[in-house]
Amino acid sequence: MSLDYQPEGQPGGRRGIVPTDGSAIEFQASLADRWTLMKFPVLSTRYSGRRAGLVSLVLVCILALQLPMVVALAPEPDPVPTRWELDFQPGPLRVMWVELPNQPARHYFYMTYRVTNYSGQDLIFAPSFDLVTAEGAIRRAGREVPPEVTAYLLGQLRSPYLEDQISILGQILQGIENARDGLIVWPADDLETDGIQVFAAGLSGEYKPFVVRDPETKRNKRVMLRKTLMLSYDTPGMLQGRGPEPLPLTGSLWVMR
Image (tube, rainbow, N blue to C red; front, side, top):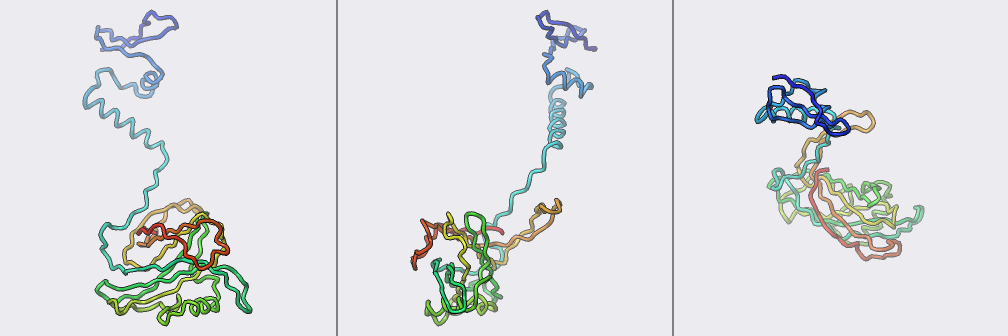
């Protein structure tokens, strides 16, 4: 069967595709139809069923090749822990103005915590704690915190079992009788932030590989994400002059980071 073009008698020259053998198949020569005929002249009106599905699949694949690559979503922790995990009980997060001799006076965020090993094996405890503001500023606990400030806070808290971030590093034995109490301190740069999140890493042995795109080299690179506890805090009003009142804890969630 051959195809021939004949006018439909409409003003403006609209055309249909009419088979010369009298078949009733007819196409409107819309812009999309004309493009398809020009790009894929081998397609005939007899294509239907599985052939039409195959043609549609080919067209979808062609369009997909022209779309930007979709970035994979970051993985989530396993619903049920598959690796060792420590029990972490955070204390209140507070902000304090500290003024000491020979040290610049400034505000600091600080919090205490208790960690207990119920994993069934003795472990090495080497945590890290990042404080992230709603505006994107990131602070690693202990950095730019003079030892004198940590010692001052330990003295104010008056707990004989409370350890600073350095002395708490090391082996943590099993059982509640071997629980350890720690103190975390960050410089408080922004007292007008809309929210704070604390990321506690080193509490779980779960990790997952993930491929990210390096913004500098424009190449993909493989990174390892660790199961991390995210604590979210509300920061109502101005934090300056807040006193010892703790910031409200609004949620906790395990994430891969």
